[in-house]
Amino acid sequence: MDDKKYWDDPVNNLGRFTVFIGLLLCFAPFLYLVLMYDVMPPWEAVLMGFLGVASAFGVVWFVEPVAFFPVLGTAGTYMSFLAGAIGQQRIPAAQIAKNVAGVPENSREAELVAICGIAGSVFFNVSLMTIAAVAGTFILAILPDIVMNAITTYILPVIFGAVLAMFAKGRMKLLAPILAIAVIVQFANTQNLIPEMLTRFIMLFCVIVGVGVARFMYVKGMVK
Image 1 (cartoon, one colour):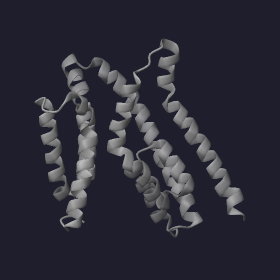
Image 2 (tube, helix red, strand yellow; image 1 turned 180 degrees about the horizontal axis):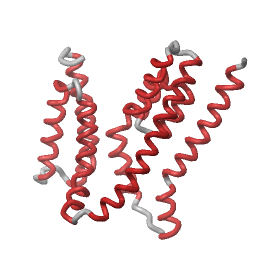
Image 3 (cartoon, helix red, strand yellow; image 1 turned 45 degrees about the vertical axis):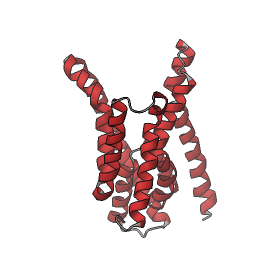
C-alpha cells in the first residue's frame, strides 16, 4: 500500500483544513464585535497583548510541535493542537493506548492506536467541559457578589500560579532565583520605581532575565 497516497496526503490535507477552520473560529468573537458593534481595540493594546503572551509562551510554539510529534504522529498532532491540553491529556492518552495495545514505537500501528487514544480523550474532555460550562453558568448566577469579585480578581494569578507549579516541579533550584527576580521587579513596579513606558515590558524582561539565569546556572553545573 502507498502510505503517502492513502494516509499521509489525506491526513495532511484534512489536518490543515481543520486547523485553519479552528483558527478562523478563534477570531469569530473578535470579528463579530468589529463588524456588528464597530468595537476595535487600539493597535498598541493588541501589540502589547501579543508581546505579553509571546514572551511567556513563544518558545513553546516552536518546541512543543517538535517534542510531541514522535508520540502523537501526524494525525495525532493535528488533533491535539486543535483540541489543546496536549501535555496534560493528549500525550498521556496516546502513550497509555500504545502501551496497552503493545504496538512498537514509531510504527504505523502505533500512530493508529495513538489516534484512538487521543480521540477518546478529546471526546471525554469535551463532554465534561460541556457539562461543567452549563453547570458553571448556573452556579455563577447564584453566587454572592463577594465571591464573584474574588473570582474575577484572582482567577488570572491562580492560572499562572498553576502553570508555574507545573513547570517548577523538580526545578526548585532554578525556580528560587527567577521567582526572586520577578518579585523584586513587581515590587519596584508597585512602588512606581519603573517608568510607566517600561511597565508594559515587565513580563518580557523577566522572561529574558530568567533565561539568562537558567543558562548561567546550567553552565556552572548548578542545574541539569
